[in-house]
Length: 557
Image (tube, rainbow, N blue to C red):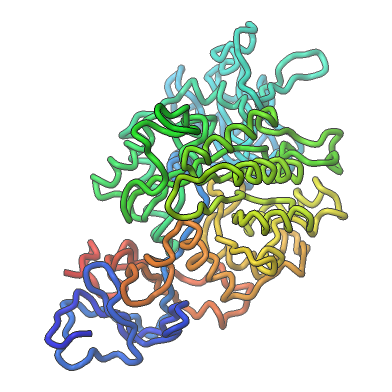
């Protein structure tokens, strides 16, 4: 650092773990204009350098800010205002929760809940029982996997299912009983029949949901997230979803940096050029370090917990092998044409059949001219069941797997029952991906299935335990530092930000987390319970300002 310099902030009395090979440890971090100026070996600034503000970490561990490479911000924010159904163990409890919420609402209002688990409940909610619980109101309950929902008769009527007018989207299924009567359960893309009754959500309402969600993220140490699917398909909230993020940012309510993945159906044939894209030639990377357009998201299949992931062989506990998200040819063409238009693609593929189909499409796309200045970093979202042959193809194509280790704890027993013992050790691999030369960015898929807290995700990477204590794929476990790098260095890399953030090094973003204990030294059973004392994004405290002696708004100036 130059002499006679005033910097914005000094975070001192800290056990700094930089994840930067040049200077792996330190005692203090000097910050100016949102970036790291230096990592210091002691608490003192060089002679002639002073800090406007000094924050004491009290000997706590400081690591780079956490990054969730695949989650659903607006959806999570909305779920915070819905009936929480996770953890309920019988259907009567679900109906009681619906009745309690319905009693608070006007007669025609939607009753919306999220997080039910049909395995734990020994079945899905029945539409006629929902009719009684909701007092005839429209009721929409979302499965924890997000690939299934259960609705009341009023929803089916409004959607045109009962009179035969509904057009089921490709890749969707309306579940019917033996007599052909709809049960109220909608699979995959058919969920849009319910969701479209409420969509598009208003831009201000979505901005409020984003604010709620990112406030939670900051409390958990997150400084960057990737929103995995906006604007289209059954997952999008609104065609104007990007405007909601812009509004949240304008309000000062965007507590994390965000990359946004457009759902691939919103891409169209781009005038004047090859492939598919968005108007004005928009591509990934448009935006800045706070809010940016990311890859295009495409669904090749569903989920294991809902038995809708596309498998090569039937499920061990079902008489079917799941579903592809659309006709194979349509999925193939959509991915290849998006890449031809200059888009990095994130392909949702969980079952081994879906993984094969996605890799076939990526291989075909590699034969087309790439218009970008830098080679694309395509992604395989989830990569739930990947055998050694598919792993070799994944590595040869350079496609990055983005698994969710916390699924192993939350639904590992259900997934193992789905695929059978002979395939259980292939679930959500990690060490094998690394051994093949691939990076493994960490993510949660929140609010689908799992708790999104990064520290709990790291614990699952290390332990690979299910909720009942079974270990799935013991050889796929990684050490704590590898897990930490997945949530920092590797997640930044897959977003193309390895020279911008993910480590604590001079010139990189001053995104950091203050932890109550050293993550590398506590018992692995306690990793998920470590306190997040404070979170700084660009040197400003988004959580825990008081604990560091900073002003409430975290402004270091």
